[in-house]
Image (tube, rainbow, N blue to C red; front, side, top):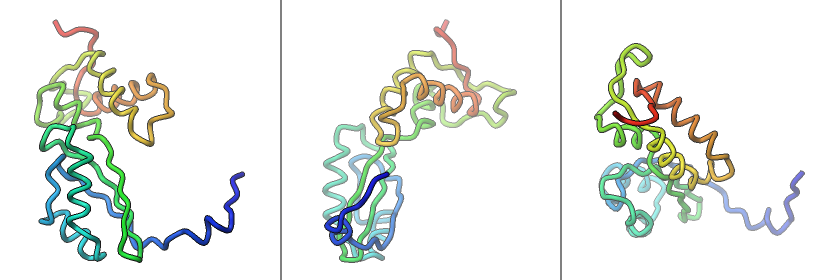
Length: 157
């Protein structure tokens, strides 16, 4: 059981809000959706945009990045950037715009186990997956692909 010290309790800042956004990599601007979401909590828009764009410069432009912003009552903030969603990676690997309207009945495309492994390696760097075995992440990616109507095969022929 973890115990908190008095110093930790006294240094905690009261949280005003937790904001979840999807922002294209390297394209955070004070315009919507970022501006209104952060502006209502009086957060420094330019500081967020500059930090976010610096953290996401290694990704291709227009890659949708999930960001969780914790706004504090003293008008400061912290944020974490997650890699794009598994569905986005699967659609890119399969070369399609959207999944099947009837998953389980109609397959719209195929991906290989190599694609699944590569997606799982990228997702393993996310904070909530870093302690999961790669096999578990691969099974999750396969399940997501099947629910989108995408067949997972050993090799594309």
